[in-house]
Length: 400
View 1 (cartoon, rainbow, N blue to C red):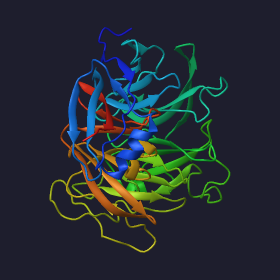
View 2 (view 1 turned 30 degrees about the vertical axis):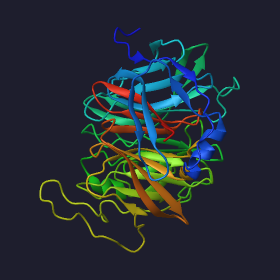
View 3 (view 1 turned 45 degrees about the vertical axis):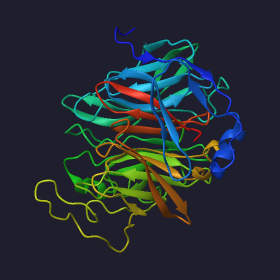
């Protein structure tokens, strides 16, 4: 067990009271759900009653003291898994207040942006047979590294043997632009993003290179037979989309659509609808500028390459993307919540017919750099802040 223990805050269920006359319509769903909203008993409420267009929200710190946390996943019994880039996977029990580092994870390349990254559960987790925890990580290879996907069986509050499922076709330096978000599709396959690795952007246009792509894999890490390029001898079978600079936010909506937020260079951060076989342009097409010269990179649009659905303002630096599925959030339901690192923002993006109809800034610096955004099973939204002392937060609607 690690000597450093994240501080964990006890929680207890809170039943919403009947809304007062004059509160917005969204609050009716919030109060009526009754399921909502586990609340923190002795936790620090860091912000209460922050106004949004539809209703105020509150933010509670659930756990703290994580070293650059990257992802949170929810076990069926109410506990959390929190990954840290240093390679530690933490088991957090909000009821008992206990937190411990799980033994058995592989040694990661913790250089730059590398480390232990995304963590998700198998869609059928809890049935015994499919109690798999999937994770992405930077696999060390001398002074270089590869983006990799592995899984480990959950066995009576401990980790079983790790199974390595996939690694990108070549190791490289420097230690950045791993991508590494995972999202499950309705057919039981998964998407995994891999960034362009930060040194040779044209790799994102190379059909024989996993860098700068999203991959579609089976639950055991192979390429499905109906992937878009399996009949193209010049293109790697695992590739699902190309021309992606560095996707660090990815989610599959209730309707099966896959959406991703992607780091541009200097500005040029994008929201994209991922569709099989599409090329999203990087670095031939970009709406961002070179870091050194501030000159545009590539052209703004090109035939055969997809324009972004939405361009974020300024240096948003996206990481973490979730669909709001809870009735508790009323008018937010079906919208996307996108987290930002450098911007420290949480944006609500309302979708309509494949376009962003409306954008609202929900948070702007209140929790710092936002690394992960998840819809929780308790109807709340969970956020992870990135930092040497990162925290897990719960966002819930609150009465006026």
